[in-house]
Length: 454
Image (cartoon, rainbow, N blue to C red; front, side, top):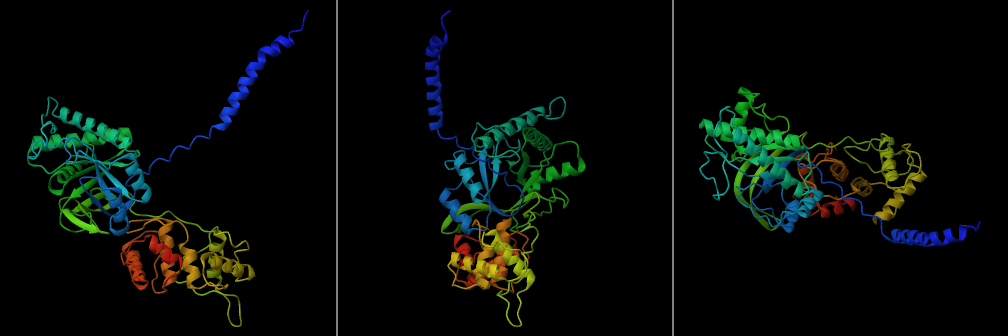
């Protein structure tokens, strides 16, 4: 019987060549780019200042205001047929991602159907108001249906912009007559359905309204009819009293506290920061846990927080460097890859050599002592984001420690939250080193801290 090997080999040869070709093509194709990380939840935990404006500002304006204004959050109108600015030329997924990456917190707003007794709506003639009919059940079924629909539209708009589930979506319900029963009850039914549907879809419910109407109606329902409506997770109070807090006499003290309030304390006005003027409303936020920084551990538990950072040097007659400060110095140098010895609190040869290397790396004059310049540069080294009141995290701790090193009288507690005390200490330091005394940490401030300017 003749062998089958030669014919079989001839049949398999083209297949082998094809497989080899495919393998070579596959190896020539670059690895797929990793999917971009989802945007962070917004606004998340925050205690600080914000603004809202009808049209989302340009990127140039946002960048200037990030570095020069007190604001850390911005309200943006993402959906709703009754919003004043239907055209949002700047509001794109790229704009959203850029703001969140730079540190802005976003407050996405929907202005859809308004209360049936609100005299300024419908605004365009083709934007419906909330149906005030109670229906046979007395539960305002049409208003509830409208609320669910509007929530679905808001979620779709938010997703299209790249916003992340878990973020707060705000419904803007303009002022109305709360003594009009059908108007009030249908509005509450609408907002209840809005909240319920957002929860079903994985989002946080927020409601903006005037303190004397929508917010009062929600608070009265919370206290007097706690099971009648699904209440929003957070409220945004329009109360133009000029006081930057979250209090108002129209809302009981225990309502939406802690962490559930924003107050719009000033209505439309022009503000100029960094040479850029925008017409805004001003807000103060206290949301979630507020501005908090996660716990931090360095080098397995080494203490690096001190109210003052003294000059350290090698042992000499009558002098030994303080052990706690020296251990902190060794830890900081180890984190920079310069110290491979024990964290023993002894200013030994290895420690001195590591200090000398750091001084050379940072362009500090030659030597192996660790004085104010070395401390400031070590303590502040790292990422350089813009920081202002409301910012929180390890980068704020770096600034607080560096300011303590710059001036022993500062005595900040490095808790990682940019609070008014930190901003005041920062302004004082900025004034001493001839930087704009804004209380905001920008690239120029980081550079000065790294150089040890005091």
